[in-house]
Length: 588
Image 1: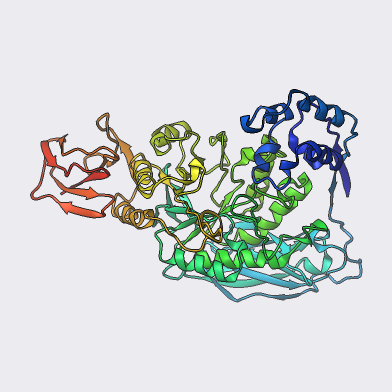
Image 2: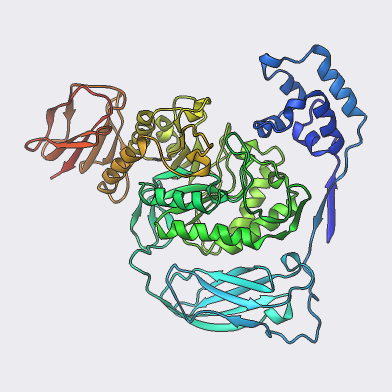
């Protein structure tokens, strides 16, 4: 193993996160700023410097001398050297007299296309196999000779696993490689069978701005967010799954790590590493029970036809998982990818609100992207989510834009611009939440949520849902799941039906009048949306010689009224003078 580290100098330019991470520095902060202890907004505070914090809130403005006092006391502290232990797997983990390939192996003789084929090995457990043992396998498709290198992982109690998602029917073979002699050189053959009727494969980008399953079936992401739903215990988690089963949502944003923030004070039942909140964590030893539980929930989503948009890092943390050293970050990423990449419904999101993570810089996110993509044999969809500042979604490793609004009011209205800027699918994963909490991001109406969905759709993007209604037990859907209480989900289901009945290649923006967006396929299909306007009629000027059926759609009351006859050229359509109306034209 090797040691890496760097010194931190505490001054007016130092991020509060660095001071907080130092024991003596934290004592100085809490001596003068006791409100920082347990503060739900600590993630934001750690991004700032002390002068920035001093000016951040007028309701408790600092006395003029306080900043100088704190900085003077910090100047007397010698910061603890930040050391990072990098473990390198030993090539003599097992003695030379250990017979190569002697580990007990089991695997199925068949697995379905886009399912999971798993090799289980009973092997050595001395030392720390999480860092001491390297394991992988090469899978070869006998039909075309393609080769996949797949990383394996240690699952505790001497058990190792290698998971693979086959993408072609026919004969396959594998051979293992490891620095542990007993685990290397083990080979086998098996058959990939046709996929089940409801197995369409993983989702991929198609037609630049849209998505489809691997078998070609169009995929229209209709997402929602339940950040910490897998950390709530069996009863609430099962209730969440039941709610999802009856909902229109086919994508779920969710975190690997537990969450600490407003309405999220409960401790999870399991932690990702060995240790405890009181005694600290051993970041070199994963807790397999934690990850088995996570993958069981991902499998449940898969069986419901829901994509798991898996958030690998986030800042809302009181356990230290957001502030691990680089070697621990990298080891965690390799472990997660090895365990979960074979699930066809997994997407990678490097972070929720990456720019709130004070201890990470751009070079860290780029390194994380390399680790994930190099260890994922299947090229899963991958992105990164912002808070205040967009990441550069033009980076080649990013498959789609995972956007949070950076304007209080305009969100979906910017979809056209973002499509042109980045040339990738635009998924507005956070357009605000339907709810009634105190903060503006969590108290829009159901009508406004539905309007944003429609606005984003007719501008060629995909908008995500969230809900934050106050609850006596702090069970808010956006983080803990449970039940939905809002008025938008059934209207979102109505929109999903209309989108699925639309062009197979997806909705793209079309030239339209200045006051209302339109989308579709030129001379074939048009969808006009009038939002919060309330016209009593509308004049249309279409290309002569092409006849259309016309439907007037009330997006809130969920009605579709077919207009009598056919229309071509210049014509007028009567409208009810209500908000949230749309008009659909389909070529006959």
